[in-house]
Image (cartoon, rainbow, N blue to C red; front, side, top):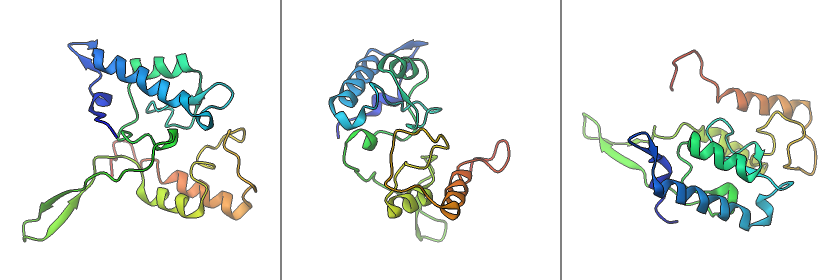
Length: 164
């Protein structure tokens, strides 16, 4: 995986950086190279509000990324065919000298991801929209549907301003 730091350096003095524009074009071209990324001429949009769940036309994805930017912590384009590459974990020392992990940079829920990966459904049911282009072999029963709703609820803040 090449350096993707450009993804989060969109503006300089209120203007789009040229390397950001080039990077967005490279991303969109990459996404459209692989047929399984495309559904009805559309790809998943990695803009923060779309969360890789909405499928949009090339121009709309480009517009979102140029005007709003990428989803945080999405340097590894796994939903577009890239293999997962583990990020290095930042380690520090606590006041008593015990090593601890600092990993609060990303806002995604690692427990939800673990459960979804273990069940082999990925993002199939993360979208409440029934017309999702991701197709599973069998629809979940009522108990499973309720479970997926609970997982989805873990992504919502407990109150306004809650960040953890």
